[in-house]
Length: 90
Image 1 (cartoon, rainbow, N blue to C red):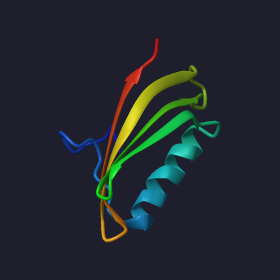
Image 2: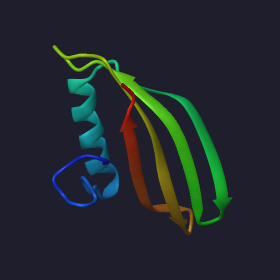
Image 3: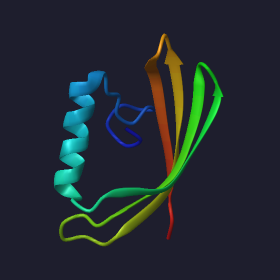
C-alpha cells in the first residue's frame, strides 16, 4: 500500500488474504471509496502501468481525491510486485 509503517515501501502486503484484509479495513473506514478514470498500459510480458483517480469520504471526515499510478511486475502469470504512488489533488 502507498501509505504505511514500512519505509520506504509504505505497507508491504503478501498474498491474497493479507491484501483482502487491508482493503476490507480501508472500505470499513471509507465506504464510498472508488477508483475512477482508470487507464492501463501493458509494456511487455513482465511490466504494466495503471493510472487512476481515487475518491472517497472517510467517516466523519472531508472528501478526498488522489491521482495515482500502480507499477506492476509479472512472472509466470503471477503478480510479483505492485508499487503504488499517489498525490493529493487539492
